[in-house]
Length: 424
Image (cartoon, rainbow, N blue to C red):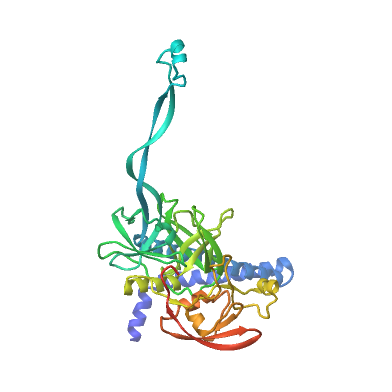
């Protein structure tokens, strides 16, 4: 063994000497720089500065490596996710309008005919319908959630009962789509196209998101630029917004995710992805008149809807049967309430919008207007966990325990949830 080592030293003597010399020179150079810094400054401050600069170079290098790694991750996720993201085209029969000129004689009288004759006519432009034609009238985004053709989008994208819908994949293939279900309280719809082996996306965990977390939005921007990609961060969580469409219909959405990733008209229904490539939200709305303020429905609610449609062929959801206002600090002050959280059972603006729906589980359990639901099965009702989402997480037939503040006294009420009637 010793002989082999001696032989190795003889054969690589020159290489070893050169390596040792370079290492020694490097060490001497570093020492020289440090000594010069101390001599120049007359203290250890110069040495400290050199060391700090060396550390700064390392930190900058680490930042650059992190940025490169992040960019590589985003590119990989987009490449994998894009085939599962689709454009949804809305077409319908629209009237073909043609313009023509109707002849009109204002002097249709024997007296004037003697002066002007029968050929004195005005031509009046008018319009009339000449049949119909299929025309693209709108569009949005969606994404496959199964290999057998289930697609998620927003309800407002496919809300026209007289329209036809076509799913266009990233490869340009077109599939007629059937609307299976639309949620009346959440802006979600589930479509189905015929086929197999479609690429699809998985739902992630939207319960443990963090503000500042990187997200990726993909969609059919402006219903024109298919599979446009934007990257941003989560700007806020558990937002409550009123979203309206171009026809003036409005709905209140609770617990939504706020992001600065660009979400344009046409992006509605597209996925919001985390850096593992999973869907944490469904893009739903933007704040008009502002920059980089978009919103997405959390995956937890959308996933439940998809599972319901796949199992029952419709959206089956548990139902409590109350209208309420989310209690906040401002609501507490305005209404002189004893708590700053919970769901205040309250009637709507019209007489028909009662606080507790007659015959509902809430009615049967004895809940009344102005009661405040503080907890559901021990979970505090607040902006992070609004009542509607806590109930949506339950099962039909499940009995839940509500902590309720009623006429100044706290009490527990057990309620057995039922299947929500259609339209609720």
